[in-house]
Amino acid sequence: MLLKKKILIGLTREELESFAQELGEPVFRGRQLYSWLYQKRAASFDEMTDLPTAWRLKLSEVADIGTLELARPAKETRDGSQKFLFELADGLRVESVYLPDSPGETVCISSQVGCTLGCRFCATAKMGLFRNLTTSEIILQVLEVEGHCQTRLTNIVFMGMGEPLHNYENVVAALRLLTDPDGIGLSARRITVSTVGLVPAIERWMLDSPPAKLAISLHATTDERRSELMPVNRAYPLEVLFKTLRRFAHFTRDPVTFEYIMIAGFNDREEDVDNLAHWLKNIPAKMNLIRLHPTGSGLIPSSDEAIERFMGWLTEAGIRCTLRESRGIEDEAACGMLFTQEPFKPTKVRAWERADERSP
Ligand code: SAH
Image: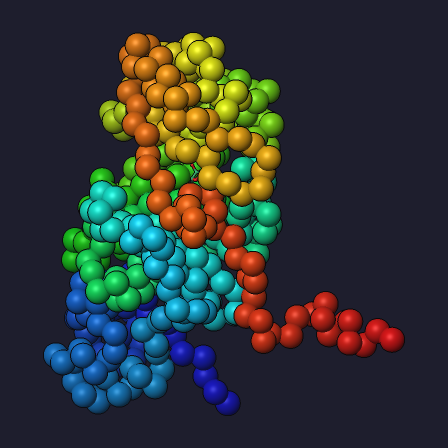
């Protein structure tokens, strides 16, 4: 019988220490393995030259470092970013985007295959949810993009497919591995986890203090309009969300970052700034304005003039704001545009196709 090999990327130092012991090796071998996997980014057991040859051989029999296959060659977009379509072990596919100089060496990664939230403007929403990514798959997106782009990444944004806080455990486990100075060693201040504002998960975040910044996708200033865009607002309306965010700001002592897609006539009016001033009372905040990217939602992006006017009003109201320049739009690699046409490996025979074959 063929034994399933253990995937090592995604395991903590303690788990690797136990694994070494299970294989009859001393605990420190686990620590060496940890350093090879994460700090030195080893791609094979052969590279791990301070491990005894016999043990390296044993390791290659029972374990795999872990990889994500490229479903097709990475696509370089016109502005230098690169979109990766990765194929997971079960044939499902996710996308990641490499964004050089934006700022630093940035990768935008996915936390789920698809999403359940149904935000009206987002392409991923149309897929529905297939499953959560494992800790290993989250980290491997970073390591694979580094390998393919021959770079050391400095910044990570969880703004690819999925709602990171719906996959809380795996995302937080990945954050701990990504920021361990003895491992991958990224700075927690350079990792941003973006959420629609799941209140119980934000409460939990305050207890756990995971090593990353949180950003809130706001996109509208009244419950009526926000619920129209984001069904999640019906579960956690603005009053409830901002009550938690007030505590969150107090707790982190940092400004709360909001993402705000600019939609013509819908959320770029002067009264939206008045509403924002109301919600943001006593909350140090930073608004990241984003141009609406086309996803067939029927919503119309605000014009440059409207965005400029809106930024002027925000500034007058004492609300800090920046316009995030979008990249990869023509190539469908920008925020909210990640959508896997074929979330499965095309060769895979699916249950419903088999059923079709049987039907007369
Ligand atoms: N579920 C999380 C993270 C994924 S989306 C969240 O919603 O925050 C990352 C960012 O891209 C979010 O701010 C999201 O609102 C934004 N986005 C989604 N669709 C977009 C679109 N069509 N145009 C511009 N930004 C979009």
